[in-house]
Length: 163
Image 1 (cartoon, one colour):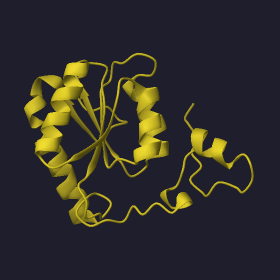
Image 2 (cartoon, one colour):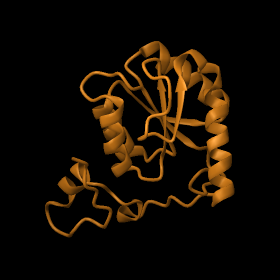
Image 3 (cartoon, helix red, strand yellow):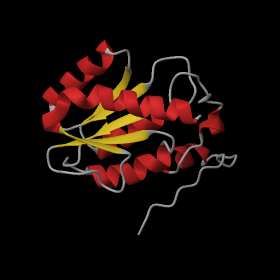
Image 4 (cartoon, one colour):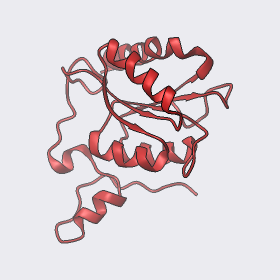
């Protein structure tokens, strides 16, 4: 059974905040501008990345790699639940997502994240998988950590050319 996403504005009234916490939020519902040139959504500022992994060393290394290449790391999460909260708050362009995590694994998180941030590109970064799962935009095995930035760069180039 799939997650049903509502992507319209929240209705007026007292339960609008709850809708935003548990439903999907369209970028325009709170006046968020997601049109920028130079990133997947046409923005001029650096592309935003959310890193989701339960290994602190991986989080640290990925943050360093992305920041050295000019990406803005907007959040780190140790599981899919934390990732969902971060994604709602920061609306990242890219989500680098581990597969095996406590509380909510990568596949379950991806389903929720697709609802919360439909334009974000999900890159599975996992040692447990050997190919791209159907729910991801790209895949990279953790043995190939040095290729993660070039992978995002190629996804960025593809999305900018296609816009």
